[in-house]
Length: 590
Ligand code: ADP
Ligand code: MG
Image (cartoon, rainbow, N blue to C red; front, side, top):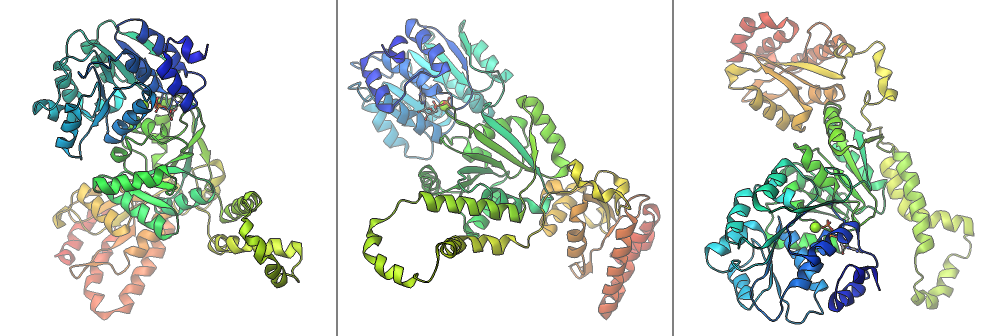
């Protein structure tokens, strides 16, 4: 008797399971399948991503369907189109020896009438996203009034995505006496309230610890300056030559931008976000599944459905706003018992978010250093050597060997090896040999060299405060000023903080690593013919040295162009204590 047979599964399923190569049931399968086969009951099953939940409900569901009837008997609700297709595909594989069993997927972004047609032919199992399901019920295109089983898959994600009302509506169209099986990776209170409201004395099973991400995932964070996110991402990719990853960004714009840059820099990358057409998204996902894309840059919403095994790394290019989202991101790796790494690129000011996440996932992050250029060269070199060793020989070369040998006859083995390796390696070496260290100083105990005669030591937290000669009078509030700065400095929102607008001037902070950039950009910076000036604030203890430096720059500027003389009076404000600056500046501002 095979382990699956012992769970009570019948021949057609066992046959399919052996085709799939599953040898032993996973824990959630072992716990759920016998219960679901033995009796009609509601069930709540908590298990992390990648633990085989689809089969845990799929096997018993398939076995319980009456194939001789064409009535829809089972409904599976899942949060995204991607997952919907994935589940449908799995169910079809599991049921391939069940003649007459039809499973149909319905989801948004595809022809509703096509889907309705398929349902009409008779679908005993329907796999649906809540939105499209509701739509089709409304139009009388699907009848779920006789179902025996309703499965809520990835219930936490469905609720996260705001499907509560839709789910409630859909359930109200189903018979009272059906069984409801709820599967979820986490158990936030929204999920338990669904369980309370819509289920009757559910059996509960839990695999692993509640509320934690998969323990096979190692969490790492890398502290860099806000401007260094992209070069840091590149290094992380280069330091992991076999990488197969999802890179998460916060906005569609960043997602597109990062993907474009990666492609430009020669990586196999692709973007996945909501501004792409369904067709474009399918193309990207297919390429990713086939591993033609090694780095899939995605927004959280677009990546919800990604259910691809073997993802080696999840890279958080930016942290998400919600901690819960981090769990979903990192759950994309370490699936099906494999191990994975979730990397987070953070600025120093975000470190407290890491603490909050650690608490939530009950796992510590490892603080790692962005590899140096030389380290990456080394890694690439060994990787290259190994892949040369492992390259299968193309026998076609045989015939050309005499000619090849002739060309190489004066090159000895040692030299030949060096040359072969150089073909690839020189590219990396040229790029990396002169690059700087990207790790933000001060993040780690090693990074404290600065504290002696410190430029900015008195802020203590490695940040610098600036004065800027625009304020509320110019129509700014702190939010719009932050946007203005972000835009013009090319920084992320979180790189600019403590924005404080006064009547005719304002203050803001950045990490000190960004000071050269800020001062550089705001040299000769004009809007509508008017100079916008930024100086390091002279508040006591806010960094004397750089103020001097800045003043020098300003004088330079004044010296260079006669026409700027009139504006120069604007910049006096920066030297004074904030309170007195107002009147002096007023004239220059209009
Ligand atoms: P979950 O829904 O819990 O995230 P899935 O059901 O998508 O996980 O399963 C993850 C992967 O593991 C899939 O590729 C699936 O085919 C595979 N899998 C499921 N059960 C088994 C098993 N018993 N043995 C081997 N692989 C399995
Ligand atoms: Mg699943």
